[in-house]
Length: 115
Image 1 (cartoon, rainbow, N blue to C red):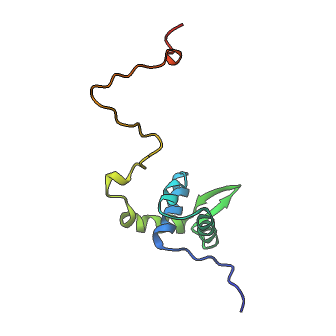
Image 2: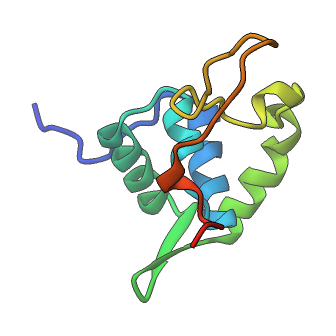
Image 3: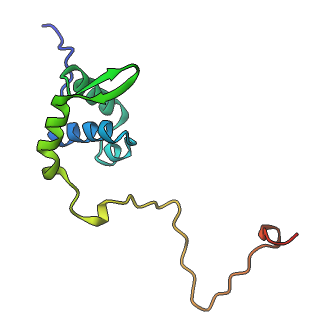
């Protein structure tokens, strides 16, 4: 049995996200948050290229008419309605809480206005 060279995409929303990234020339962070790994993103992008949703124009991915149609017809369904999901929570930059009575004194060598 011959192996198919045509990749399949996991779901309709994932394809929408790839097309959205191409339209907005955005980062794939949103696609990663959706739960796809880099290999799946590659396969999904390959699927979108092979099926005419996007095309490679002089080394840059651009949207096609078919991709625009797919995006506009699914935009309302996949639009983020919950404002809490708009911004990715960054745990690394979170500052630990201190008590209201604590006094913060910076180190002398970190004060930039002193000469």
